[in-house]
Length: 115
Length: 111
Image 1: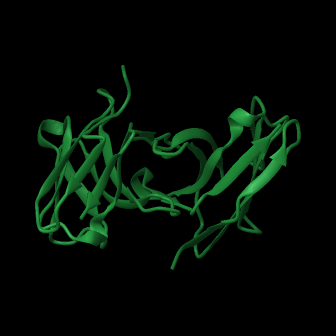
Image 2: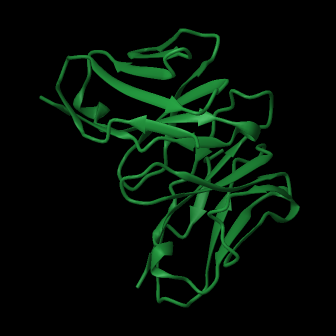
């Protein structure tokens, strides 16, 4: 397995445009997470899926953000009407559910720049 | 609210010395604490996990301690090398293995 894959690696968009990012997790992992990281900060949790069900969303995830994981495989994160404050690195991670002590595998991230 | 503090100032040490990074947290009682390494422009990479009932965990040149009374974890890299230069993130594991990260500490190992 090649690990968690994210596409694109970089995205520059004009304010007000919509963008969509894709994450392909490790195939046997049933949990998938989205995090956002701004410069000088640690990643912040946005949302997570167990299989195809979206089980939790952070208050950071405004109405302009939507995430899906059809069929419990890959996931997409869409941002509508982008704002300059959305500029960040968007990280996807996957893991196996269990009793805790679960290692998360991160992708390389998608760096979004809103101009 | 939950707060995780890592030294925001970069840590500069000489090759061969032991690097010690600190992670303090408040308003939280995690069952698990994890450490990740992050290189510029890349996603975090898992290094070590320690459970609340473990005092210390080792992996090769890495050692992590976890003091639930002090609400502190220490991360040590012995015999440090320039290749160890990176940002190191502390993360508390919550429900559904959701991670809450600190801001990270940048380590620079010089020759």
